[in-house]
Every structure is written in C-alpha cells, then in structure tokens.
Amino acid sequence: MVEEDGTLKKIADGIALLDLSVAMGNQQMVVHPTLLWDDKDVILVDTGFPGMLTSIRDEMERAGFALERLSKVILTHQDYDHIGGLPEIQQSVGPVEVLAHDFDRPYIEGEKLLIKHDPSRGTPPRAKVDQLIGEGDILPYAGGLRVIFTPGHTPGHISLYHPESQSLITGDATVSNDGELLGPNEKFTPDMPLALKSLARFTDFDIKTALCYHGGICDHDVNAQFARLATRA
Ligand SMILES: [Zn+2]
Image 1: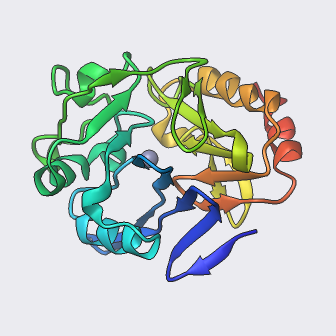
Image 2 (image 1 turned 180 degrees about the vertical axis):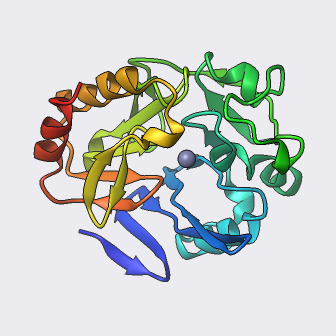
Image 3 (image 1 turned 45 degrees about the vertical axis):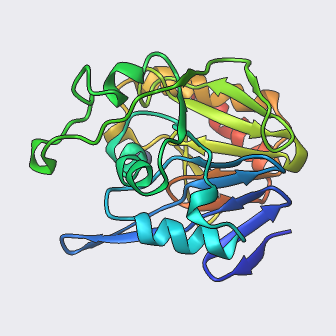
C-alpha cells in the first residue's frame, strides 16, 4: 500500500520514495531518490541535483529521520542529476559511505569527465567511492538489497531489488509516466541496445512496485509491463 505523507511516499516498512524538485532556468526538475532504513543504517539511493539539500532534509524528516542519521549513499550511476547532491550532503552530515559500480567510479570520483558532461554546468560534482558493488551482490541493508547490473544508460549503471517489499529501484534503466513504464530515455542513453538487454533482466524478479527516479511509482501490472518491454531487447 502506498501512503502519502507530505510528498514523501512510504512504500513499506524500511523503504520510501522521495519527491525532490528544483527550478532550473524556467523548468521545474523533479527526481525521486529512494530512502531505505533498518535498525542501524539510513541509506539514500541517488542524491538529486546540486541545491536539493533542504528538500532532502525535509523529506527525510517526513520519514522520521534527521538528515544527520544518513549513513550510506548508493549511486545507481554517474549522471549529474544522481550525484549532484552528494558533496552538499557530505559537507553537512560528514563522511557518508558511498557505494557504486566500478565502471562508473572514475567518473564519480572526477578522474574522468562525466560521460554526459555539460560544460554550462561548470565543474561536475565529485565524491570518493568507498565500496564497489556489482551484479548479484546482496547488500545487508533494510533486510537485504540485491544489486542488478543494468548497463546501457551508463557503463556502470545498477538497479536494486528489495525483496521484503518486492520493490525495484530502477535508477534510469526505465522511466515511468503516470504509472506506465516507458523503458530508458533514448536521448540520454548512449547504448540503447545494451540498455534494453539490461531492462529484460527485470523479468527474473517478482516486482510489485517499480520506483523510477524519473516518473516515480509504478505499481500496476509491473511484471507484465516489464515482460512487454523485454520484447524490445
Ligand atoms: Zn537521471
């Protein structure tokens, strides 16, 4: 069941979807990091654009946590809208452990220029990756999180399956629009054939709710929608 509390949406015990927005020029950008928690850790999956720290703080408070409780950040990939909030989080909270895939690590750490670097945005945000994660890893947080390697949108893109709530944190492996899963955004996906192959991986899982960073929650016929998208691979 999805409860609405402010703008944050609690999916189940230990998992909620954040709703962050920021004005960029004359456009309102909305993104949806996921918050996970257990007795020990509070974990944010992706961090929004630079300038979203106050919204992250507010949304975490709606979930019952001070921003300072944040202990880990998992990055689904290197893109600006996913890593942008991380430097401000670390300035405000102190050291927060960062997890990401090795193939996107050099970009996140600033060793290489972000693949989709936009010079008008100035120097890209960067952060040290403390722990590398990859296909099949079970991360011992929030009852266990399964890492699914889903390259194509970037070389080191990952998605996360949360078995307890049967939720899939898609990152940008697919976007959704009013609960309809659309597949990867072609404009920002350099390797579409690989991204579609990655998307087909989701048919191995029993998914009740897909949490899309762009587009939010999809919770109807999710397995059937992924099965249909898999035929494009
Ligand atoms: Zn994105």
